[in-house]
Length: 169
Image (cartoon, rainbow, N blue to C red; front, top):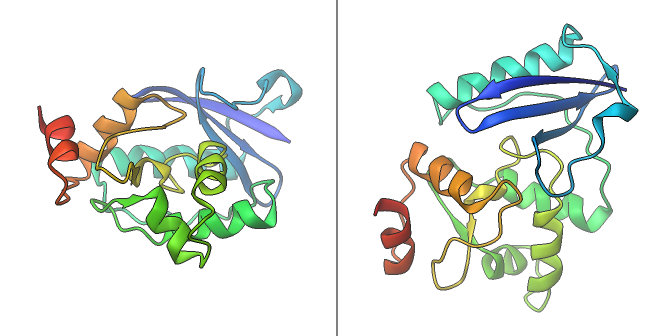
Protein backbone atom coordinates (compact mmCIF):
# COMPACT_ATOMS: atom_id res chain seq x y z
CA UNK A 1 0.00 0.00 0.00
CA UNK A 2 1.06 3.54 -0.75
CA UNK A 3 0.52 6.99 0.67
CA UNK A 4 1.09 10.60 -0.21
CA UNK A 5 0.62 13.87 1.58
CA UNK A 6 -0.61 17.13 0.16
CA UNK A 7 -1.69 20.59 1.26
CA UNK A 8 -5.26 21.86 1.41
CA UNK A 9 -6.84 25.03 2.82
CA UNK A 10 -7.55 22.95 5.95
CA UNK A 11 -3.97 21.73 6.34
CA UNK A 12 -2.03 18.65 5.35
CA UNK A 13 -3.94 15.59 4.21
CA UNK A 14 -2.87 12.02 3.52
CA UNK A 15 -4.13 9.72 0.80
CA UNK A 16 -3.73 5.93 1.07
CA UNK A 17 -4.18 3.55 -1.85
CA UNK A 18 -3.42 0.10 -3.13
CA UNK A 19 -2.85 -0.49 -6.83
CA UNK A 20 -6.57 -0.19 -7.68
CA UNK A 21 -8.42 1.78 -4.98
CA UNK A 22 -8.26 4.70 -2.63
CA UNK A 23 -8.40 3.19 0.85
CA UNK A 24 -8.35 6.37 2.91
CA UNK A 25 -8.14 10.16 2.99
CA UNK A 26 -7.22 11.72 6.31
CA UNK A 27 -6.31 15.06 7.84
CA UNK A 28 -2.94 15.11 9.56
CA UNK A 29 -3.64 14.50 13.26
CA UNK A 30 -7.20 13.34 12.66
CA UNK A 31 -8.71 10.82 15.02
CA UNK A 32 -8.46 7.31 13.50
CA UNK A 33 -5.72 8.39 11.08
CA UNK A 34 -3.43 5.37 10.65
CA UNK A 35 0.32 5.49 11.15
CA UNK A 36 1.63 6.38 7.70
CA UNK A 37 4.97 4.67 8.38
CA UNK A 38 3.30 1.35 7.63
CA UNK A 39 2.84 2.43 3.99
CA UNK A 40 5.27 3.23 1.20
CA UNK A 41 5.54 6.94 0.38
CA UNK A 42 4.72 7.16 -3.32
CA UNK A 43 3.32 10.60 -4.25
CA UNK A 44 3.43 9.86 -7.97
CA UNK A 45 1.28 6.72 -7.75
CA UNK A 46 -1.59 7.40 -10.17
CA UNK A 47 -4.44 7.00 -7.67
CA UNK A 48 -2.75 9.19 -5.10
CA UNK A 49 -2.18 11.86 -7.73
CA UNK A 50 -5.86 11.60 -8.75
CA UNK A 51 -6.98 11.92 -5.12
CA UNK A 52 -4.79 14.99 -4.62
CA UNK A 53 -6.11 16.65 -7.79
CA UNK A 54 -9.74 15.90 -6.94
CA UNK A 55 -9.51 17.10 -3.32
CA UNK A 56 -7.83 20.31 -4.49
CA UNK A 57 -10.51 20.74 -7.16
CA UNK A 58 -13.21 20.35 -4.50
CA UNK A 59 -11.79 23.34 -2.62
CA UNK A 60 -12.21 25.53 -5.72
CA UNK A 61 -15.50 23.91 -6.83
CA UNK A 62 -17.38 22.40 -3.86
CA UNK A 63 -20.06 20.94 -6.14
CA UNK A 64 -17.38 18.87 -7.89
CA UNK A 65 -18.33 15.19 -7.98
CA UNK A 66 -15.53 12.83 -7.00
CA UNK A 67 -14.96 9.80 -9.19
CA UNK A 68 -12.25 7.99 -7.29
CA UNK A 69 -12.37 4.19 -7.03
CA UNK A 70 -12.90 3.68 -3.29
CA UNK A 71 -12.48 0.57 -1.19
CA UNK A 72 -12.41 1.57 2.46
CA UNK A 73 -11.81 -1.28 4.90
CA UNK A 74 -15.08 -1.08 6.86
CA UNK A 75 -17.83 -3.39 8.11
CA UNK A 76 -20.97 -3.97 6.07
CA UNK A 77 -22.92 -1.69 8.44
CA UNK A 78 -20.34 1.08 8.05
CA UNK A 79 -20.48 0.60 4.28
CA UNK A 80 -24.27 1.11 4.33
CA UNK A 81 -23.87 4.28 6.42
CA UNK A 82 -21.17 5.63 4.10
CA UNK A 83 -23.40 4.96 1.10
CA UNK A 84 -26.11 7.19 2.63
CA UNK A 85 -23.49 9.91 3.16
CA UNK A 86 -22.37 9.70 -0.48
CA UNK A 87 -25.91 10.58 -1.55
CA UNK A 88 -26.01 13.90 0.34
CA UNK A 89 -25.50 16.74 -2.16
CA UNK A 90 -23.04 19.54 -1.46
CA UNK A 91 -24.63 22.29 0.61
CA UNK A 92 -27.17 19.98 2.28
CA UNK A 93 -27.07 18.41 5.71
CA UNK A 94 -28.70 15.49 7.49
CA UNK A 95 -28.83 14.62 11.16
CA UNK A 96 -27.52 11.35 12.57
CA UNK A 97 -31.15 10.40 13.18
CA UNK A 98 -32.06 11.06 9.55
CA UNK A 99 -29.22 8.80 8.43
CA UNK A 100 -30.46 6.06 10.77
CA UNK A 101 -33.97 6.51 9.39
CA UNK A 102 -32.75 6.25 5.79
CA UNK A 103 -31.08 2.97 6.70
CA UNK A 104 -34.40 1.70 8.09
CA UNK A 105 -32.80 1.51 11.55
CA UNK A 106 -34.29 4.43 13.51
CA UNK A 107 -32.94 3.17 16.84
CA UNK A 108 -29.36 2.86 15.57
CA UNK A 109 -28.39 6.52 15.91
CA UNK A 110 -25.38 5.80 18.13
CA UNK A 111 -24.12 3.07 15.80
CA UNK A 112 -24.57 5.45 12.87
CA UNK A 113 -22.61 8.15 14.72
CA UNK A 114 -19.81 5.69 15.44
CA UNK A 115 -19.65 4.57 11.81
CA UNK A 116 -19.54 8.19 10.63
CA UNK A 117 -16.79 9.06 13.12
CA UNK A 118 -14.62 6.29 11.65
CA UNK A 119 -15.16 7.33 8.01
CA UNK A 120 -11.79 6.55 6.41
CA UNK A 121 -12.43 8.63 3.28
CA UNK A 122 -13.03 12.09 4.69
CA UNK A 123 -14.41 14.82 2.35
CA UNK A 124 -14.97 12.39 -0.56
CA UNK A 125 -17.53 10.58 1.59
CA UNK A 126 -19.00 13.74 3.13
CA UNK A 127 -19.34 13.06 6.84
CA UNK A 128 -18.99 16.82 7.39
CA UNK A 129 -22.60 17.14 6.15
CA UNK A 130 -23.96 15.41 9.27
CA UNK A 131 -25.21 17.61 12.09
CA UNK A 132 -27.01 17.12 15.39
CA UNK A 133 -30.80 16.74 15.49
CA UNK A 134 -31.05 20.27 16.90
CA UNK A 135 -28.93 21.62 14.04
CA UNK A 136 -25.73 21.88 16.07
CA UNK A 137 -22.33 21.23 14.57
CA UNK A 138 -21.13 18.12 16.37
CA UNK A 139 -18.71 15.29 15.87
CA UNK A 140 -16.17 15.64 13.09
CA UNK A 141 -12.88 13.71 13.13
CA UNK A 142 -11.15 16.65 11.44
CA UNK A 143 -12.38 19.08 14.10
CA UNK A 144 -15.43 21.32 14.26
CA UNK A 145 -13.60 24.29 12.73
CA UNK A 146 -12.84 22.20 9.62
CA UNK A 147 -16.46 21.01 9.51
CA UNK A 148 -17.72 24.59 9.70
CA UNK A 149 -15.33 25.70 6.96
CA UNK A 150 -16.38 22.85 4.64
CA UNK A 151 -20.08 23.57 5.16
CA UNK A 152 -19.51 27.29 4.55
CA UNK A 153 -17.51 26.46 1.41
CA UNK A 154 -20.49 24.45 0.16
CA UNK A 155 -22.96 27.19 1.07
CA UNK A 156 -24.79 24.86 3.45
CA UNK A 157 -28.13 26.04 4.72
CA UNK A 158 -30.82 24.40 6.76
CA UNK A 159 -33.90 25.37 8.71
CA UNK A 160 -32.34 24.92 12.12
CA UNK A 161 -31.58 28.23 13.83
CA UNK A 162 -28.69 26.86 15.89
CA UNK A 163 -26.82 25.56 12.84
CA UNK A 164 -27.39 28.84 11.02
CA UNK A 165 -25.92 30.70 13.98
CA UNK A 166 -22.92 28.37 14.23
CA UNK A 167 -22.25 28.37 10.49
CA UNK A 168 -22.60 32.02 9.68
CA UNK A 169 -21.42 33.86 12.80
